[in-house]
Image 1 (spheres, rainbow, N blue to C red):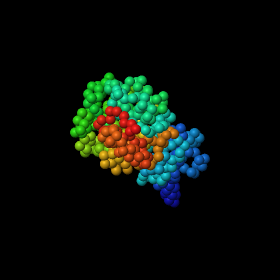
Image 2 (tube, helix red, strand yellow; image 1 turned 180 degrees about the vertical axis):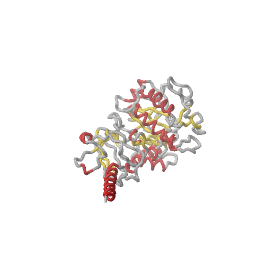
Image 3 (spheres, helix red, strand yellow; image 1 turned 90 degrees about the horizontal axis):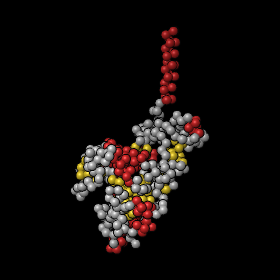
Image 4 (tube, helix red, strand yellow; image 1 turned 90 degrees about the vertical axis):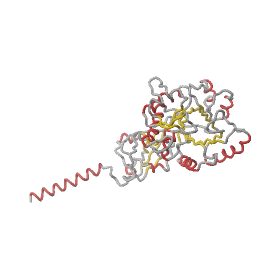
Length: 399
């Protein structure tokens, strides 16, 4: 009899232990919807006042009172972002987060967007990399609202005062070209180490030549920590010190190349390193605008770094030759996916640009340029039409 009683007690205690363990287990079939709200650029939990409306995820009463999220255990599946609107005051509904859908990406903390971010007026915009010589600075400043130049101090394209004139008393945003995916031989930091940094060459990050068309440029492995430090803490800082409002990231498409690419091979570590580099750039310059050119595939659109949805690190994206030179249906499809996210950065729509090339900025090409502007506008994109990718020395007005 004692043996039977003992066995019964052991069985009951085992059931209690299993129940306790089950209450703490993350292996839940399906969680109820979680409402998340963005207020003043900070992701916050919407307190409905009804504890049964959403799981508490271990959030304390005090945390609920101020509505802030500071948890390590919310797993987000990228598919739950399909209808997300990243907008001040909007409510996000992450539903049907099941164990089968869980990924290794974890929202580890609140993500704050600086109130200084966002592009108030994104059209018309211009991108040119020549000097101010022969350029009517005041005309550019009065005509364009977003202006992309190369502010590398070694080039001497613009003086600090000219950059301020381009800003037109805060009416415009001036950003600078920043090559993150490759390195040109004519940059001062290509082979010569800046103080306390390793050059592009000495970082060991460089891989193949860019292409037969650009033999004086080499792709980079973006997971290389010395290279990341060079770009973020030296190259970008020098641009920021010029007084520009942000950066125009070029050649990020290396993250899409894959390990077997003839030019610029980039494995999964390299690809994730590219996202990490942009995260470090955002951390270093929380108030600056960051616009990424090309690289608009799902690798970036659905990417995460440091638990943050990658697009939230950016203020806009642009893609080349979506409509010109035969067009690019894949690029158009990708850009529409970004558009359909309806992302907002503070009070401003996430900027979506296209840069198109028609050979020359003259009357003979004006009708083609106007047609491209109209197509882009109908698709919800801000177009700039210029001569050729390898030229872009002066602004095109198409008046």
